[in-house]
Length: 172
Image 1 (tube, rainbow, N blue to C red):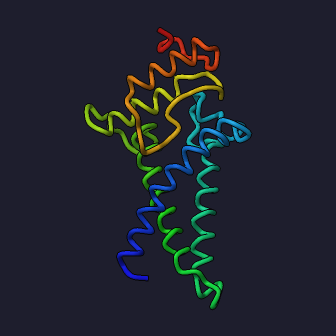
Image 2 (tube, rainbow, N blue to C red; image 1 turned 135 degrees about the horizontal axis):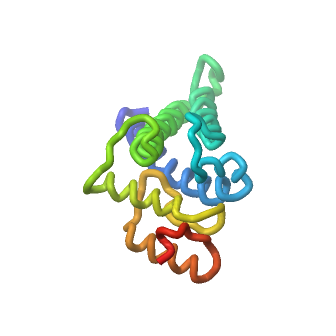
Image 3 (cartoon, rainbow, N blue to C red; image 1 turned 90 degrees about the vertical axis):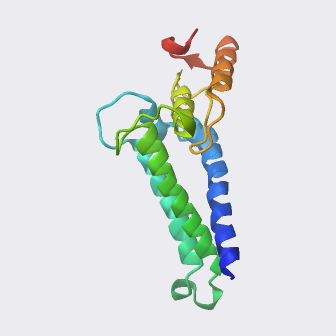
């Protein structure tokens, strides 16, 4: 593969992983995977959460792609693009860790953005955590953040329709 093709594949994989993460968050974590995800939405003083197990799922996806692309493991049946897809998944995992765990939840560093896209990311994810329970909700992505005013309006509509239970501070 050419260097340009490799770079395009890595960037495309990182972008695709935001879609995978959005769908996984909305339909798995807030669906049948709620048992692992619930503690992420509840106050606690533990360093680790059951929710962190989802990171191991992402790591397994990346490792599987590295293995599928490795001639040392697969011999002549290795598929080279899998290596670069695995690298894209790994890069997404690093971005997720820095943005979601680091910036939004401040698990690894302390910085409260006052403006720009970083502030928008934090606001959007805080609005995601404004619901009680797994039903309803907004902003299931981790790197792409929609306009917080529109997200607030969606939450208000979900509350009015009986879809979501919204925490008191955002109920009005």
